[in-house]
Image 1 (cartoon, rainbow over the protein chains, first blue to last red):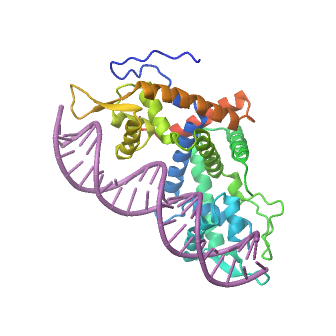
Image 2: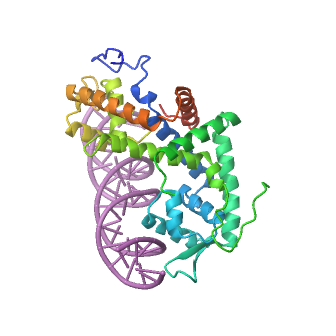
Image 3: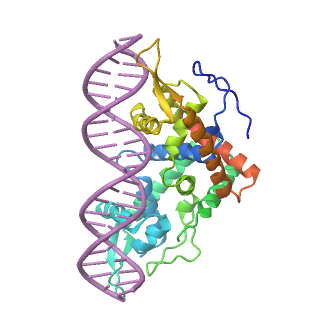
Length: 160
Length: 160
DNA sequence: TATTGTTATACTCTATAACTATA
DNA sequence: TATAGTTATAGAGTATAACAATA
């Protein structure tokens, strides 16, 4: 259907070819995602929070007393996968699992004072990392990108 | 520094709060990436190629006789990681490792006729999946998104 | 019966380090 | 010495299935 340049069987003919791959949103999204993640980890350094741990802490700070099930749903991951993340945050004394009187199945998650501090410090570092990495993008570019990403993200039915 | 809404310590106070997390490009990029990848896999089905295998095949079709080292560099992964991908493509008879006369260290990668066919079939399926998933985006939206993703991707220094 | 948190387990993707054969 | 391909190995991140305690 689409016209395609004739392939030469001799040697690598990289001359001016734009591979199909480069025209796919998925591939470019993956590469951009990897670049951001790598820079995030570099910005937070050796002992820093991983992206997923930071995300979890962020939502616990925003939603005190949230349950693990709700949090997992918000993050779009399974309950089982969240256990190790909360274990790490608890081990670092950044949050606590506390008992809920009415429903003894639930352990409400609350950020400790240390957790609040660490979160806001880390958030500042993360924002600086994004500002630096996305310095070539205008404010309007970033706004557009954010809106488009949210649209794609929501297309795939969030469980929320 | 930034004004922040006072947190209530009572119960989960989700009321109208926009968590910091939602304002980060990185987090939204991850969610969008996961959504696209999930839909890609669903579109290609059980026995279909994985995103990374498809990407590798695409570049082999575009660059006949490419070496594994060059291919790994283009994909932004390590040489060692590419071995399993090429093994799979060879096992499926979609490409061959062929000997290069001048340099016996290199095994030039060439797509088989089956590989060419499978690639073009799969590409059509992938394009259909993207068209479907990104149906809410205008052509101009998609163009903008692509440009922004490429910009971010290149900020992080491609080895190429 | 359904839900919460948990464990056990496995799978995918990726990286690092070391090896071999060639150059 | 340097490069191409390979292996061994380990570490993230994730999912599925099952279980105990509780509702």
